[in-house]
Image (cartoon, rainbow, N blue to C red; front, side, top):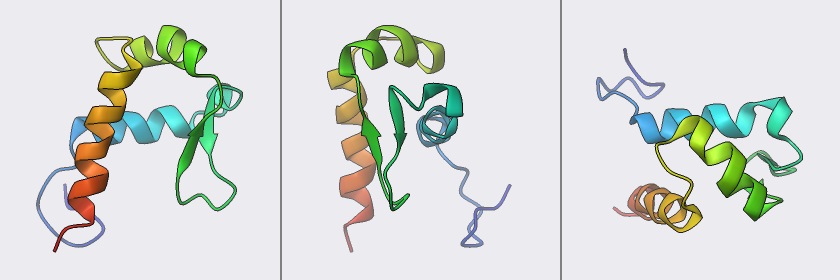
Amino acid sequence: MESARGCSNPIPPFLTKTYDMVGDPIMDSVVSWSSTNASFVVWKQPEFARDVLPMYFKHNNFSSFVRQLNTYVLGSNRG
């Protein structure tokens, strides 16, 4: 599968799962896209960690999710 930029690198599962999670309208009261759709907001951190994270990942640790997310955010700003 090719990405939108025409590269043959697959999209990492973490990013796909995060995109699906944030885009699920059922989750909007807990996590949703910002008004500009350029970022997302976790509205209810305890519920996000307890209820949402385990649906998409093998843990419910909010700090681990943020650390993982930061590896992609920081990586995209390099070079």
